[in-house]
Image 1 (cartoon, rainbow, N blue to C red):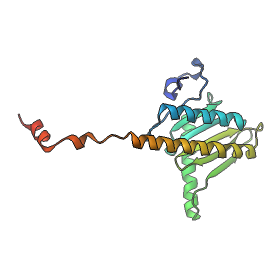
Image 2 (tube, one colour; image 1 turned 120 degrees about the vertical axis):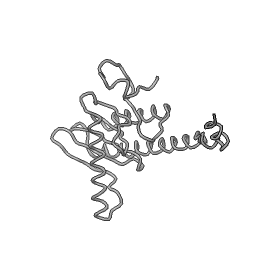
Image 3 (cartoon, rainbow, N blue to C red; image 1 turned 60 degrees about the vertical axis):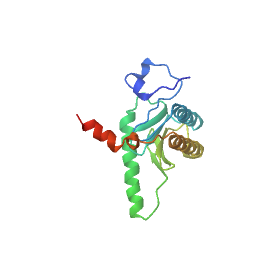
Image 4 (cartoon, rainbow, N blue to C red; image 1 turned 135 degrees about the horizontal axis):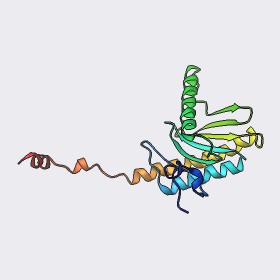
Length: 183
């Protein structure tokens, strides 16, 4: 099945019948279609196994990477940005306390609980859940999914490094530049 990209279906998500979660990648990071699909599958499996309402994978810059579950009614972009801000603020607190990073956070609401985890220093995993699940189950399932995501990020980094091309500027000589400006 061909992966669906968030930019393809964000306009009206109800118009599309999609089995895979929506995915996108932004910023300087590279994400190949195979790894995007695998990341989406990890999010979907985590949603199912943790009995979560929704799962979002977010870049440290606040850009959504992947999501799964009941996200149609969510403003994924705003939630992603605010979550990244929350993680950054918590990082500031950890520095004041001379701690490394707080690797996870938990927020308890009346109807919805939030579990936030750093994934290999590269991304943020946000799990929304309610009374149908428990913090213990979410933490257990997040640990396994985070390990899979770290492996996928490592795989992408290796693939990007092996496919990197030399800069076109290295092929331009001084005589090429002289010829360009000579009439």
